[in-house]
Length: 115
Image: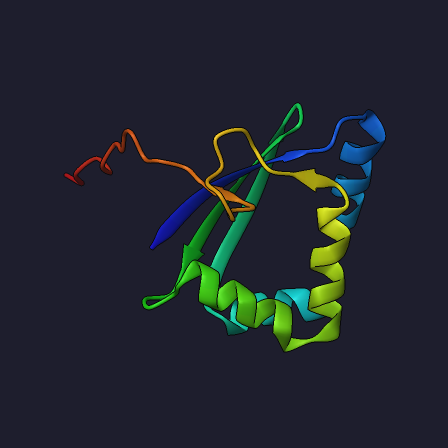
C-alpha cells in the first residue's frame, strides 16, 4: 500500500537547511524502527516549504497505530520526532488532529503493458 502525505516547514531558509541536514544523517534507531513497524520505503520531497512524503508499507499497516508504535519503540525515535516537529507545521487543509496530512489520490497511470 502507498500513502502520500503533506506537511509544511516553518518559515525561514535556515529551517529548510536544518531539515535537509538532519535527513542526510537519519539516526539508525529511527531507520530500524520504521522498518520494524512496516514501512518498506519512504521518500520525502521538498518544494519551497511544502514537504511531501511517499510511504510504501506492508499489508496491515495502520498509519496512526504503527507510527505511535514507532515513536514509543525507542527514546531516540521520540527525540527525532520531537526535533522534526520544531521545524514543521501542519499544512493548510490538514484534518483536525492530523500532523502529516493524507493527500487524496486523483490520478494514476497504470504501467504500460509489456509486449
